[in-house]
Figure 1: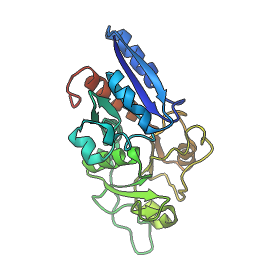
Figure 2: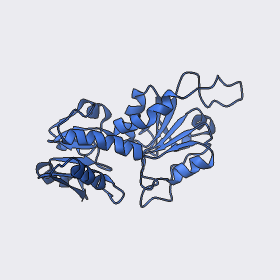
Figure 3: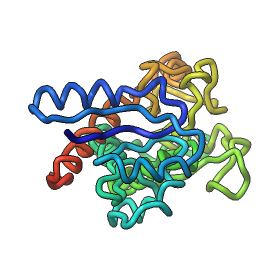
Length: 255
């Protein structure tokens, strides 16, 4: 019997146990999957010895790295880990993000340069994104977008931590970016009634939220109200979970 699990805090929203339990049955794998809501990252030490593999979610995607024996090159570049197998860290979040956003990036038709005084929603031949947040999820989203050729600007509440602060998000800045990605906990329990401080959303935007439970956050509702394309994090979750499964089963996760 193999043992797997997920660590993080909070974990009431997570679908990982349901997903992997169903896969174990479907693939006839003798294994179980449990939830470990850790108060502190130090509590992961015995789990690294007792579990065959684990998923890692907020707030431990960066904090777990010093406890691992090795780290996959992609995870090292990203600076965050969401899967651990045999004490080696991987990042599959970016795979889920790329699978979700690639069709929208590839199909994006960019407008001509604006006339003086007009909208500066986009410049020709450049897809731009605002990534809201600077934690582990934000790092994976940024990496994925950059792999797709998108020009990324990060936004943080703390000056100097991102490229911009929320106070810098003027009408001109927001409308110069096609994608706006929420990589913060705002919108997830217990913050369902909150969203990042972003205004001037239009029908020309694509709003992507890493959160998948609830399926429609306040951030996405605001986007729909203004006619924007909206995507929740379910595709990201499924993409990263499928890659995590391959890692757990000893297969090439990039297949």
